[in-house]
Structures are given as structure tokens and as C-alpha cells.
Image (cartoon, rainbow, N blue to C red):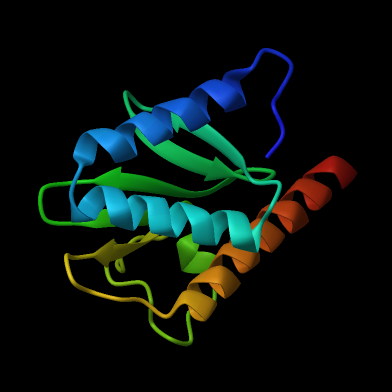
Length: 136
């Protein structure tokens, strides 16, 4: 992760650290775990903090958000409807034209390799859209 000129990335990372600590339960542990998988998939991912307190991971556009609710950690992929999901990680927002989400509940696991592949696919999609946009 690299800091942008005004330190917003470092500030966002600190806010995400704070959110994880504040939760203090399985949701914090889950958010920390998926965060580490995102960094494993895309080492230079940019962390941001948007919409009054939502962790966001970006690479040439939004990859996914990490929202926490009472009974679920929700990972929403901004362009999820355009991604292949052969292992069926997406479990929410399936009817939308753009977004798809993964709802994680207490005690549930996830196919980590498939998740890493999905993160990389989302970043590749962002890169291809950015490249196409720069050509036009």
C-alpha cells in the first residue's frame, strides 16, 4: 500500500484498524482476515474510507467495500455482476445490474483461493476499463 500525497491512504488504513478494534468480536476478526486476503491478492491496493465509515479497497476504481452489520460482514463488489464467480462466492445483491456481494456470517468459512482470484479479477476489470477510457 502506498500513501497518496496528502496521507489519505494512511488515514484510511488507521480508520480501518480502529473499526476492527472497535468491533471486538467475530466481525472484527473477519474484516481483518478478508483485509489480509485483499492485500495478499493486490499488494498495492489502496484503502479508502467513504460514506460515513465504510472501508473501501481500490485499484484503478473500487474493488469492494467491507461493511459490518450485527449479523454479517458484507463485501460488496462494485462491478461484481461483470465478474465470473465459478465457486459461487457471491451470495447477496444477485439481482443487481452492477454490484454483487458476499455475506459472511459468524462461524462461516470461505474459499480463500477463490476469493483472492475474485479480488484479482475485479482489479483486472478496473484496469481494462481504465485503459479503454484513456483511449477514448
